[in-house]
Each structure stands twice: as structure tokens, then as C-alpha cells.
Length: 287
View 1: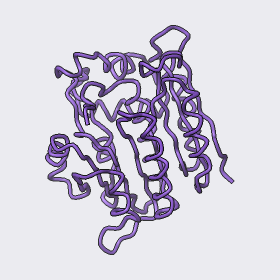
View 2: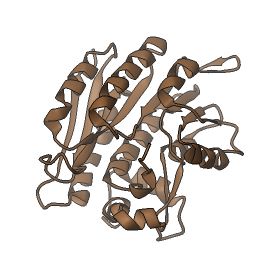
View 3: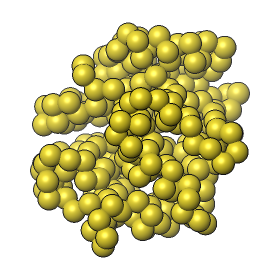
View 4: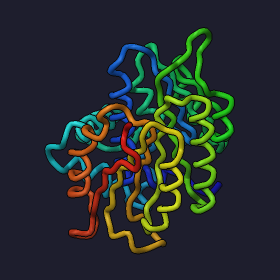
């Protein structure tokens, strides 16, 4: 695998993904019962925005840094900014927490996180990051394979009825990734039907996504919601023009948490004037 997230940490795609992630976790934790989170492609968990990789692309400057300077934000965005700021000195944006670290920060004593990472160096960094946290288990293995081993979730005698599976692959071979994602979603829903499934996907040309989203909407979930953010027109297959989150079994009224956030993200992060866009739509509405 050639992909390294350090080049892209804190970009517009991370912003969308992590705003949605925290909104989901907050909704799940409105009930006292414990939650289980499985992060299938966790990365190293924490990234230096002052490092050579981040400086080379400058993507965080157009993502988290621009958002932080954008003034008052809706609650879901403010919640996200506060979570990232907790890992930085006041007024600085030197460190970016990845999905497993943001999720771990949100865990309660009764919650658990399993984070999977296949690349050895990234997995070693992730294990070191959570070495002292008994709520987090790090697995140096393929995240898709871990679905069969870790679901339905339990810790000793405790079974978790509520929780989230986050699927965020690198999409190095984009068209080849979608069948794997769909197969993984089928496996998750068969083993843990009530799970919230959150899949991040890149948008270059949106029309190329239609077969994937159509098949995803036909999976046996209660409902299917998409939240998308474009920072440029979706007219080029050569660059990341935006991204989306496919959400199966989203928590009740999650769309109401995300609805104010998406237009604010568009206004703040669009890179070509009047070329950004957002979408929040049920592919299958709750029954």
C-alpha cells in the first residue's frame, strides 16, 4: 500500500468525516448502555501538521486551519473543532487527531473501540498511542477480515447492542474498492443488524458513484443516508473534488444534527468560488 494519510490529514475530507463521526457517537451515547466502535482502516491515530508530509501538500491549511478561522459554526462543527483543539496548544493547529483518537476521546467507561491497521509502521504507532487505554484494542490486521472476527461485539460477558462500524479505506484502486465495501456491509449487517455503518467515499465525478450507492441502498438496513461535501465541481477524475459519508442505520435524527453543518462547511471550505456544494439525502428513508 502506497497511501499515507500524513499527506492529507486535516483536509476537507477529514473535516466532513470527523464532523459526522462525532455526531454519530454523540447520538449513540444519549443512552446509558455501552457502545462498541470498530474502525476498519484506522491509520496511526495522530498526525503532525508541522511535518514534511503535511507541509508538502498544504491540505490541512485548506481544511482544519481554514475552518478554525471561519468564525462561529453550527453545533456539530463547533463540537468537532473543540475535539481537535484539545490536542493542540491554544491558538495552534499543529496536531491532527485521526478517527481512532477522536473516537477514543469520546468513549465513556462502558464503551469500547477496536482499531484495525494493516501497515506495520502505522499499526505500531497506533499501538503505542493507546498502550495505556484499556478501552481500546488495536489489531494489526486487515480491517475487512476483522469484521468476521470481531462482530457481533462482546467484551467478556458483555454484549454490545449499540455501536458503529467506520469503513474508511484508502481507495488506491477506487473502482475495485467498492465491491469490497459492499461485501463488508453485507457481512456487518448479517452479524450485527442494528449497527450504524459509516463509509467514507471520495468524489471525483459523482456520476461514477451511482452504481455503488444504488447497491448500498438495497442492503438490509433500516435506512440509508448520504452526507456529501464538494469543495470544487465534480468534473475531474484526477483530483479529490469532495467526499461523502454513506450512513446505514443512522441514529435517530442524525440528519438534523448534520443539516446546519454542511452548508457552513461548503461556505468555508470551497476552493473555487460558487463551485462548492453539499448534499444530505436519504437513499432509503426510515420505515
